[in-house]
Length: 573
Image 1 (cartoon, rainbow, N blue to C red):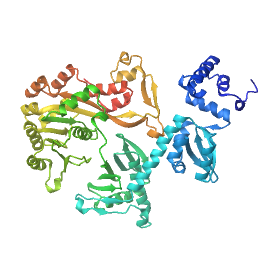
Image 2 (cartoon, rainbow, N blue to C red):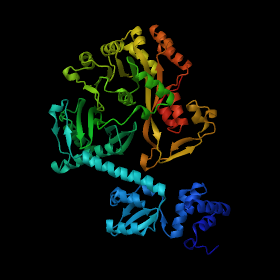
Image 3 (cartoon, rainbow, N blue to C red):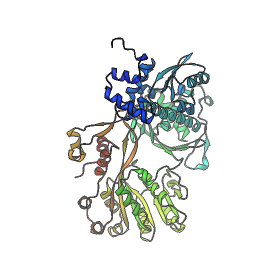
Image 4 (tube, rainbow, N blue to C red):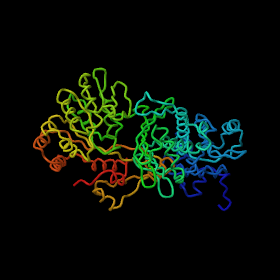
């Protein structure tokens, strides 16, 4: 055994020698292999005797090649990976990681694929330095690396053309974003603004915050509802950054003492991103927040919002009613508009006239008449709605009920044979009903018109790339009021953190919901002007799932974590 040489041994012998499997497992796999005709390594993996990582380790030893750690696959240099076309990379399961003047480092599933290696030489004019990696690891890394390459290509395409749009689109003016079109003195600042916007678009950010501090400027982007720092340029760059953004959004560059609001649009061949700019003077200088709205298209539908099956059935039934009112509540950025757009997408058809009044129009939907309000010229929600009454609508979406006049029109619409969707800022479903009463709508009108009230939040979903199971502590379970018996011995999941999710452990978001359908009993409470606590108690007695309950269901299903549910919901009292 002392003279054991893996390069002169069979795969099974190496595995037994390293005590990864025993003789009986090897014999069972050989018998299985003779029936199925698959390779021995694949047969051992399918039986669960070894992992893909074990197989790669042994394969590399047998062939005398170095093994690549999976983490290094995800850290591949995008510029180098680009040298190999994606279709070739996927056909031969090969990924370029790095290069020098004469050689290129590549990870391959089969390092003895001589045809692929010869073609790599021709493609790159470099000598391939081959290392071994597992098939599924390579596939996941290629999905991410080539996805980013495509994305950055789209971003470059987007930045070919940018229009600055002040309040009125007629006043649109094109501004070239390239640094070579500005003075040498301003070019670094132009590059910095471009870089911030590019990073935000690439990372699916919804907001960009440029915040002056005492010694530097914090640049943070909001990804999946949580801010993350992307750079901290020196304080000396603040003035140039703010001025450049003011120029793009047609704001007064001389005014530094008052808040200002503006907008511009990034228009590419296949993409349109509306950027809302807000500037606020702080003690260290002007803070800039840019809200990014991708108006390219609306990809959601009711099924993809995150409804549990029982909630989906209720919501689908209610939005199919011919008249009445559906109100969705939650804080800014909780996905209210997305839910309403998905509802309209579900019910729109040739037989219905759907009209919306919004500020701003976040997504453009085919087959829906969307009206953008302009308060500065008198086109407010209430003014728009009075005109829409004469437009023979069947279904109406009101972006937000903010005042008594808008609420009054919405209620009257719903009581005269129209289906009305709207949003309200409230903390949960029960407080949404009392919020409408606070605005000034009479209790008998609220009770009569409402069909359904829904509160919602967005929670981050666990990154599929680095998802792992773990056993929660007693304290963790107590924090969300989850009894250990509910786990039924199952483990929970969390994200370890990887390059795909910027080491956060989360990628993407899903909704959690609280639905109150207006039963006779709840209508009766509203008619009697019952307070929020009474309505809430009745709802809980009826066994309706609260936001916290909905979040816990997502935790048990392995979709999100206890920490996310605690971040997004309050304890049910």
